[in-house]
Structure formats: C-alpha cells, structure tokens
Length: 541
Image (tube, rainbow, N blue to C red; front, side, top):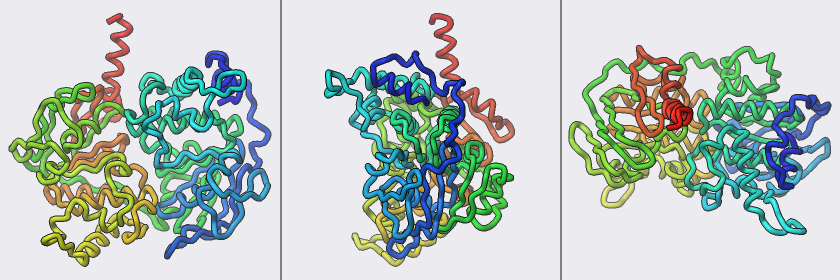
C-alpha cells in the first residue's frame, strides 16, 4: 500500500488517483536488510520462564512466520517487540541500532505497529474514528481541527481495498460490529499508519476464508513494497502460504528458523512445535445418534435472522457454517437467552423452554461458549479455578460454602486434558489468548450440560490443543450430549460433524449429512444471500 496513497488522502485527494501495489514498483533493495532484531532475549514471570535466549530478526520485504503451542512464548515476544514489556536479558535493535522501549509509544515511534489478538477497538467511536485513531487528519490553516470528512474518506478507501466496504460503513459505531469486522478495522488502522514493521497476532482467527485471502494478498503487496511483517498464527497452512521464513518456539526456546523451501509440510512444523508427531487431529465420529435433544422452531429476530428451525440429537455433533454476518452467532445467542427474540420456540426433550436469560438456559442444561471469550466467556480478574467452575457452582457449594479441594482437583484434571499451560491460581488476564480459550472450553466441560453450543471453539489455540478440543467434543457427544459447533473453518466442520447447516442472510440455506459434505456446496450456500442481492440489483429489482 503506497505511502503516496495515504498522503494523498490526508491532503484531501480522492482514492481513485492512486491504487494499491502499483505494478511498476520494483521490490525494494533493502529487502534483505534487518529492520528489527531481538537478540538473546530472556524473560521470567513469577514461577515461569516465558522466554530463554531467543533471537529473532525481521527483514524489510519479508513475511516472517512465528508459530508455537500456546504458552510457547509467542505472546511474550510480541509484547517485547511492541514495547509493552521489557525483557530481563537481551537486546533490541532497530535498523542496527540498539534500542530500549519503555512503552508501546516508543515502539510505534520507531515504526512498529502491532495488531494484537485481543482487539483494541473503542466501541463508542465510529469505524472511521477507530481507523484513523492516533493518525487523525486535520483541516484549517494549521491542520488544527479534526476533519471527519477526510477521516471517513480514508476509512472508506481502506475498507474498499480490504474488500469490506459493502459490509462495513465508516460511519457505523464500532460496538455494532461483529468480531470479524472489528478485526478488519484493526488491520485498516495499521495500513493507514504505513508502518515499516507490522506485527499481526492471529489476524485471521475471526475472518472468513474470503476475508483471509484478501488480507494475505494485502500482506503480499506490503511485502513487495519493503514492509517487514511478523505473522503469528495457529493456522499453519496460512503461515506456509505467506511466510518467507518461519521461526518455531517451544517452551520459551527457539527450536528452529527455517526458510520456506526448508518446510516440507505442515506435519514438520507440528512436530517441531509439540516435540512429537501428531498422528490423529480429528477423532472418529460417534456412531450412536439418538433422539432429538434440542429443537429450535421459527426463531426470528428482526434484522438478524428469520424463521430459523433445526434439531440437534443426542450423540450428534451439528455444524453451523456461514460467512461473518450470516446470523450464526445471533441465533445461538438467542437460543441461550443472551439476546432477545421476536418470535419462535426452543424445546428440549420435546418440552418448550421459557428462556429469557442465560441463567434460564444454564438451569435447563444448555451451555454456550461465545466467540469472544474476553467479553462473554471469562472474568479476567478471577483465577483459572474460579472461571472453570463458574457454570457449575451448585455442584461445589453447600449453603454457600465452596468445596475448594474438589474445585482444584476437577479443574486441574480438565486443564490437563486441554494442555493448559498457565497458572490456574492466577488471574485469567495474565494468560495467553489460547490458554484463556482453553479455560472457556473447560468451564462448559465441567458443567455436564446436555446441550453444548460451541461458537468458534478452536479460535486462537494451537494445533495440539485443537486436537484435544475435537476429542473432547466427541467424548461429550458419546456421553449423550447434543453438541452444536459454529465455525468459520469449513475443513473443521467437514471432519468433525455429523450434519452441517449453512446460513446466509439470516436464514438456513442448506443442510447436509456426512455423505453429502462438499466444500463447494457449503460455499455456494454461504453466498446465497449475497448472490440473490446481486442478481436483484442486476435485474433492477
């Protein structure tokens, strides 16, 4: 993305005057030069060595992939490079000069922009205001007055180049956006700043396949213009498709840094990450499917979804596919009582339920793991133990007195099953995003619910932990639960589920059993509402 483009927008010129990634621009001669390097970094937290003697180099015109299990030290390394944390030992160099960051503002001033896994959106501000935050355009003789018109013009162009202008209005209040849309706004903000170094922590975790491909193409163009990019992701195929070099961390140590041609397949990265081969990612599906456990009939919430009906059976894993904004999450939140509905019914074992709040749903044996763990899944100031038993308090308390020995024993067992690598006795907020996700999954495993709704259950967790979650899901189903999995990863649904529903435009557009699973058919149904709208425009409807 050219600097001239951003400058022209700040000066009031239209976006049509300059296009992203001009074909005539040659790859910069600085593409092999180190822009940022960290050398021999060691970092200790109370009782934990997060990093030990880690060295990493970011070069201009290169995408450097960083992979590792949750707890491997990736988040700590990112925080050090972004100025959020100072290492105990080691050196940071920018353009070859030794540098010390005392705050994130120091790193930004040095040209390093970080897009964290936990989104930094100001919900009360508009999309445009969030995109230009920290780089606000001015008007007047000294540019002393904020220009909303220019901010909206800049945001409009950034969203168009990310392929999202049709779904995100620059004037919309950010609180109304989905998780995936908020991620896109964060990415647009980084592109506006035109930093020479961009760090992306799980940037595609909340994006659809199409949105992911748009982002990867943007990163390729930025690489061609000389930007140094650190790409951190658990989606190993994406890392292999975009990275020029890949560094693997395990247990706080750098295990290897490999050039792209040195990586033969994803299995090689997995073995380096976990220290062993992972032979079975997806478990065998439970073959004993019973009676209908949950029925949803003509569920409607105006503006979000309409006349949604489906059944989930005992022992079944039911998948729900669709693009961001299709209404998948909104339906599940309404079933759980987190959002109101205008009409429709929810039945369990044939009995109509009166669910008005999440408390009503939990009492009826329905659990919901939200897509945004930070906002709806955890109490960040409380310990891992407290979060794990939050949905099961009746089992562990008598007359208000908690049986803490049982709490600690059962919580530790679930945490071990999910390969949790944090401290259960510490506030949840100090754990990595992936470890936080494991706690949300574990909370509902402990609840013994009969209906479990998992909304993006493997978002932000490593491949080894994904395997554990998949096995747990089928273990829960085999014990007699009905499990609903909402996921943006089609391959995950195809390999995990017994049936798949596909939503588009707030409606269920297709339903298929295992014998009919087909990625192209799922995608066609996911785009059904968009294609109908386009055809209507072409016909003049």
